[in-house]
Amino acid sequence: MREAVPNDFFISLLGVGGWGLAAFSLVLTGCGRYRDFKLPEQAGGPSVTWRWQARPDPVMTRGAPGEWDALDVLNPSVIRQGDAYYNLFSGYDGKTWHTGLAVSGDGVTWREEGKILSPDPGTWEGSAIAANGSAVADESGILYYYQAGDNTVQIGLARSRNGHQWVKNGAPVLAAGPWESWDERGVADPYVILAGRGYYMFYLGMDRARRQRLGVAESQDGVRWYKLRGNPILNWASTERSTRWDWASRRCGPRADIIGCCTPAATGTKCGAWASGGRAMACAGRSFRRRLRASKPGIPR
Image (cartoon, rainbow, N blue to C red; front, side):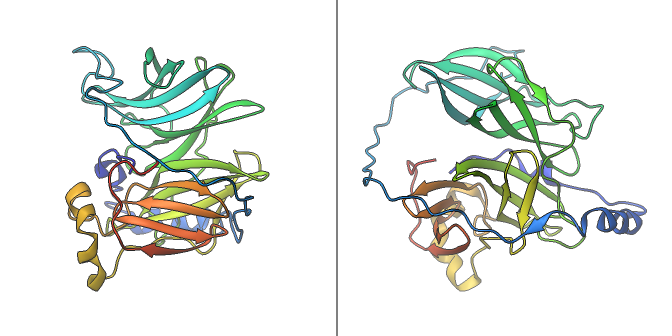
């Protein structure tokens, strides 16, 4: 399970004049980019058996007092670049979440390269966060999708050829949904995969009741994204079932029966999503159904 940054980053205050703001938002986003699609089926490969061995010490630790990552290091997103592994991770200094880079030759011993992304207060990003992201590599270089925004969290994109110098896209590539939608208060925690000729982003959305659910979006170039018209793909558990997700409650708090931090993975012809209370499977990546036996720590991220 990917550990999410605090839900407070999702809070969007309508305040005085909120109805006018909401109406304006509806005009702008009510006819936004939505369409029907399916994840392409992948050729089945050899079965994989995972065997996990806990290490006594963390492979990465917090920075020294006063550093940009002095209070927390978490949310790693690891990609292969040549003979090295690049780890884009989140760091917290007590006020702001940033993104840093660490490099490793074996995936165990990491050399931290420092901070590579911070929020820009003069833009939509605000000053709270530019982190909690997902990295993918294609022929153009590295694409890193991150969440930002003080009131309404949205998903941005930064690009790099070498992992050290980055250029932000500008506007968010995935925005919050329209008035009264399931993701109107924010979209966050992106996880992007390449499948077939497309990019697919699994993401967290939150409504005005602070309920979090899982959605998916598709892109052909990694920049212009279309949300699935039938989102969300995974909902919270019903009351009669929620007691069977008690492991998630212990891990993620009282809202754990609401889908929280999730990570998809391609497994043969199916796409699996490990959610905050168990695992859900989808044939062709569209219609998800739960497997109610709770997942345990150590399931692939």
